[in-house]
Length: 193
Image (cartoon, rainbow, N blue to C red):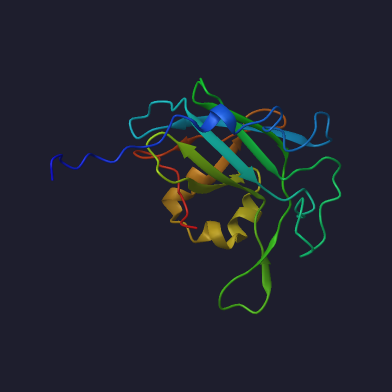
């Protein structure tokens, strides 16, 4: 062999160049009753903001229905509800904002139980960022849903001292803050999916 093996390289920062579209950060149209804002910052392991990231969200509507279940259930009737949001900027400042509605509780079957249980209101999140070869997946739960959060089978499976990394805190009327930390102190819980 003439040349030594070269180190692997990460891809990017190209996420935000072509993936977002005009109103991709709006899961619901402007003026939707009950609309909320999810916002926060994305930090690397040193606590430095990551300007080149892309956040995708997927969720149910306030009735616990999804935008399109391909005939598997009753789809959302909320006017203009997409269920999917995407936020990323080519020259970002490390923050994101998604305009949506607070999701309803969705049933799930838990292994070893005959009946379905209700999950707490939550938003599923995929994050793509520099330094990551694959996306990481987490959830956003809501700090003002303590009773539902206590019953959620996924959240109960997270160690007590890490659960707060999955909880968005209210920070104004119709606004919730959720920061994502990829490593280090306060690292966000990520799920293997």
